[in-house]
Structure formats: structure tokens, C-alpha cells
Length: 253
Image (tube, rainbow, N blue to C red; front, side, top):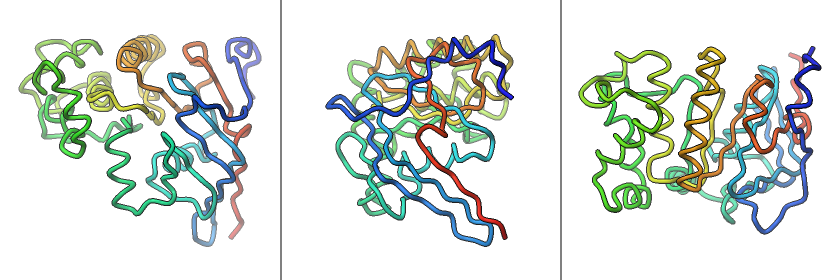
């Protein structure tokens, strides 16, 4: 049961009608995994305005990761529209969705997904190999390596760790900062984060979010983060429970 004492902080806002400022708009979306114990997710309407910091809450196994995969075009629905920056990515080919995602999304994975034997700088620069737009933005008035180092410093990584070390030698908290810098580099319009603070204690969670939001505001990025931790809600401009925007169902074998 949810601790009722934290409810006033959550600022829960149900799904709202779309507006001209929406950067994300999902309508009449239905997705089902195949298999004997199939899982389905249905979304009547969901929208996010440009510049929002949105937290999406849901229990483990409730469809949060599936939702993010639909949002970012990793999965495509059986029906409905997934409109990002005015483009229905559900209608794009697989290759076109990959290109769109690399241009417009910065993704922070729950397990970070760093290249373990790549250097810290190489890990941050990785998305730029797949997006000319982000590469050009990142090197505006500087070098790519200098921009990567600037982001890492802004996110609190110690100077001695920025150059030369491989990602596998870093602590969990340090790897988290590298993953966030990788998502932010090149100023993508959307930062999507899947439980990025789950491995951190409370103090480190809040410090990390403060740094992430400050840099996202500088770059003009919108943030969508999914989590099961309702106590983080006070950091966000809007908090929505997944059950308010999506219906999930798991079929028995």
C-alpha cells in the first residue's frame, strides 16, 4: 500500500487534452506481446508538453518499460498513433525509427548499458556516431571531447575520472553520471529514463536529479522518467500513475 503521507507532494495530474505545445502525443494505442502468457497495454491518450519534467509511476511488471519502448519506437503498436515532434513513428520503417530515435532521444537505461571497456569519453560520445544533428550541436563552438567533459563535470563526475578510465572501473553512481551525459550530449529534444536512480540511496538520488534537470533545462530537453518510487515526485512538474493513462492485462496460460 502507498504511504499516504507522501501524497500531497505528488501533484498527480490525469491525462489531459493535447495542445499545440505537445512534444509527445499517443492516441488509441494498443500493444500485445505474443505468447502463452501474453501481456497487453492500451493507451487511450497520453501527451507531454515541451519542457515538462514528467514522472510516470507504476509497479514492477505493470508495463512501464513496455510503455517507454513504445514511446521511443523500440516497439510498435498493433494499432494507434505514437506522435513525437509531429511525426507518427509507428508508421516509420524499423530503420527510419532507429534514425529518428538517435536524432531526437537521449535514453538513460536502468542498468546504464555502458560499453564496459570503452573510455568514459567514448561512452558519452557514442550517440553522436549515429546522429549528424546531435554531433553538429555538440561541437558548436567547441570540440566533441570538450563538450563531453563539460557535461561530465556538470553532472558531478570528478575530473580525474573523466579521461582515460574504462567504464567498468567506475562505481554505480559514477556510471550513472556517464549514462546521463551520454543521453544529454547533442541536446536531444527528449530525455527518456527508465528507473535511473533505483541503484542509489536517497541522498544520491535527489542530487543526481537536481543535476540532470539543471542540464536538461539548459539544453531545452523534455524529461520523461518512469519509476516505482513515489517519493521522488516533488522534483517533477507533473506526476502521473501509469494506470491513469494505460490499461494493462496479462492473459493466463
